[in-house]
Length: 601
Image (cartoon, rainbow, N blue to C red; front, side, top):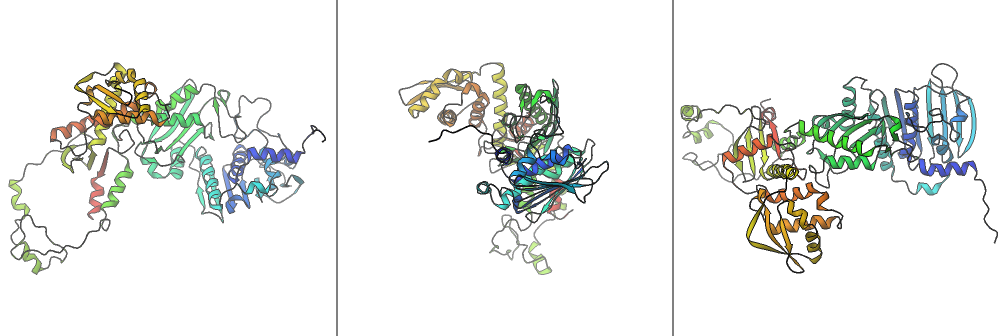
């Protein structure tokens, strides 16, 4: 057998290998071409696709354009106009000089360009790595890049692509993420495989960014978000973060940009989860549009050929800035309910939203009794009006009515009733507020636990007779290992045989608590991450579990003063709009919405 000898790969093979890193799917092609257009100073970009980008991708811009002499360089490896020698201060979106030759090696690539400052248009074609041109062509100032037959030279790659619809959606998502950072640029995405997406330029003033965000995330986000603005040691953070109650089941509504570049970075998404850690359920995700500006010398964008990841010189600074900015903005916003919950509530009350069987009773000939409902189904003709002869008009009882109560000035108003022993109904000057008493009190207890732990160990309440909780041996081991830390919460436990734990004291702040249920939940928390979840490193997680067991339970009747006290505490507590699991604690229905339901508006 002849030994293998080292040899130089053909340039086309080299480009195809590079394409495997840079071009994974059609969306990557669109990303590279749109970024080139933005680097060229375009303010109008049009994208056309076919079959999810598999058969056609065309990007047209009105940027600076290229001359005939520049076109051969544009499709050559490691040729670029964006950097010279310094990789430590990359201020453009593209810089590697790999995208166009990589694309040309796995498809048919046509580039037609005309310099904006004068000159004729030229065209060059790369078909499976074979170059023809440049040659004269007709074209407007700017550049048109057309890619057809993607991966036809490497058909095995086609098998890894998803359906046309999935690839088209991926392209749409890519364009939206790029457009978010460039409100002064107009984007149009069209094709036979999609409905047209138009994102007109929103300008360059202070309102341009939120207008572009509203184009992409919808006006609901604009109404259910808080503005972010923070700066520390040269790192600037701006944007908008959604209210905790305005969340999604997937993380695809999280837009994070660094120096105008959309990124998907684990450090940043981890910081975002940390900012909402005690406000969202584990299977829910925040909605946000965050923009980080930092000196290019303090961030490395040359981590991966796709340029979707970044590395900060000081990642701890960026993480702390993001977490503090989001939490401070949410806390400064005070008590605020998500409008989406109110809209869902309004929809539920619309005529026809509730179906019920037709009543089988009729009004009594002698007139309606106090406890008998009235049937309005047959109308109010003169014959039917006789049935109301015994009813005293409400105006005649006006003198006997209780005096009107002045409108309560508090944001959550005054409690008027409790329904189903779980929901508090309150009235403000211009709205109706419904509060979930358990969810609201759970948040209050949680915040009290966190504040108390920050100052000292929590006082405990000794049990007259220790509670013996039977648990699997592995759960007992986990709990006993954390017994000292649990003691700082006021929960005192000790081993009671191989498969049981004795609870000798519970946190006094929780009052009467189901010790067995609490201990089982804590054991589940420790087991969930296969032992990686350590109580001492997850104080808030333990506090959340304890708060759930120490809050006002559903089904408990509250007196009027208790309900109002709960409302006042909510108004004074940051983050009280959601419980520890991300559910809304209250819904506010404006009087104008109620009037619309009754046809008054």
